[in-house]
Length: 137
Image (tube, rainbow, N blue to C red; front, side, top):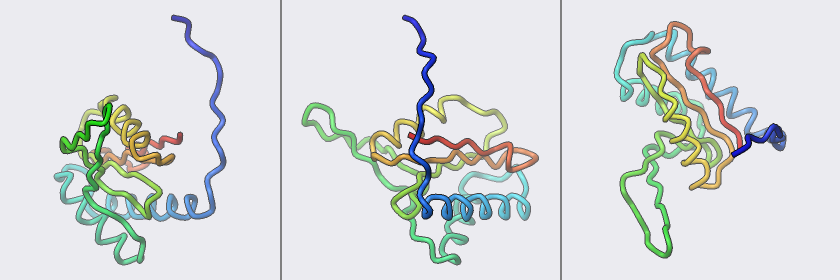
């Protein structure tokens, strides 16, 4: 099968999406600077909830996703780590090795929820900027 050389052009981010993105990055960098790498994902997650709350940014934690297959509703534990303002999906990681399956997971979550913007934030890196992966549909 031939691979397409076309480039998908995305709609520009909205002002709200840009602002939320700047807040998300500021939070991630702040947590990473304070705690550094090497802790459990759940620690970073709780700190992230705390920072979002301090900034009055609405979010849902461990948001369940239902999958519908041919009129069958499947609820098999698909969970978004953090859904920020019903706009941005965040998947937090604290792993030494980057796994490409994380991108497939985020892409699936974006499609299933019909959201267009998501981030993988891996805190197990020396510099937080190296642990950020953005996906836009």
